[in-house]
Image (tube, rainbow, N blue to C red; front, side, top):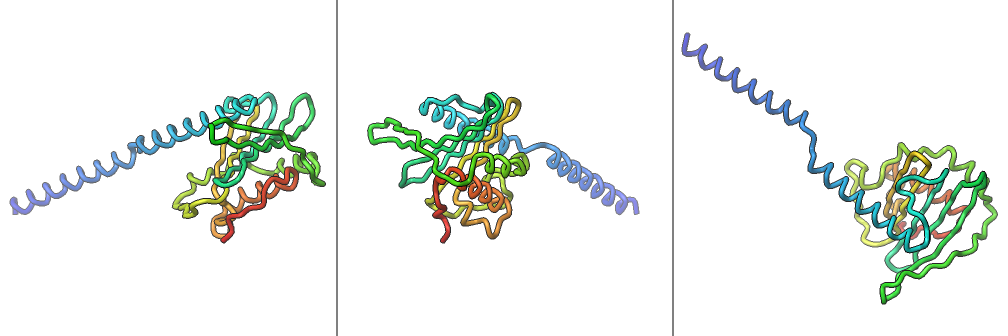
Length: 205
């Protein structure tokens, strides 16, 4: 009887230890994942900051004077576009810049005329209902896998005096039917395209 009680006690102690180990593991954060994510965000922020400087623009990673939205549209085989929507001096302004890097490594750019019937006021009114803060970047979507090799990549920067948000999506139109965040982001792209007329999505296969 004493032998049986001893065995039961040993099993109980081991089980308690295992439970404690599991509890500790669930409490300890996965710092390696966070470190990789933070490093990638810093690398991305530096890239767009340097690119903005190259295009004679002020980086907005630390905030904007009042409000500024930048949409970077890029693909492997075409010139790139940058759309800018700003609010300053109580006035809304929009600009479209086309840029590319030549074989000698020099970045060339030129502001292009915006031809549209969808006014800037219509665009601003439509954007007011968009909740950028609740929309994750594509790589942050749980269990999402991007299986498209080429196509178009969209990067949106949204900055105010006290906040900054960066969202990046690759071929959202390909995934929009099956994943809600890609659909939400694609709706923003379509909305911006109404005013800026920059690109027709090409990732639908």
